[in-house]
Image (cartoon, rainbow, N blue to C red; front, side, top):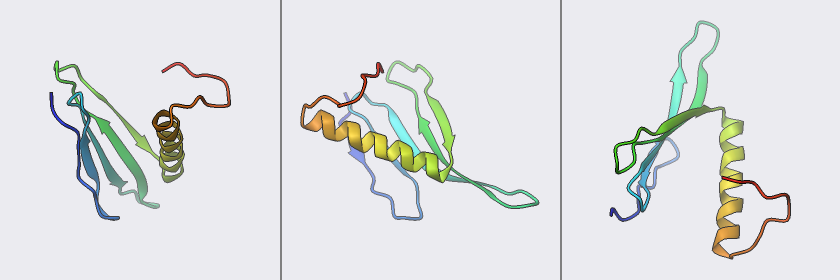
Length: 92
């Protein structure tokens, strides 16, 4: 089993981390040129698992990325303190 690792990116870079189960998660800025205006997204790429099963990816707007970050931090805090959320339960 691979140990968790995290490369702390600067504000202008992306970053990768490897989960304890060996799945690499990459976060990158995606900029698509257009004739009117550039399209900026944050790409989240969850790579293959240790068994070789394909991963998935998402392209998020900056607002969506912030919403996802907020939800991740909320759930991490709940898990760290072993507390239950106050709202309705969601199955993962």
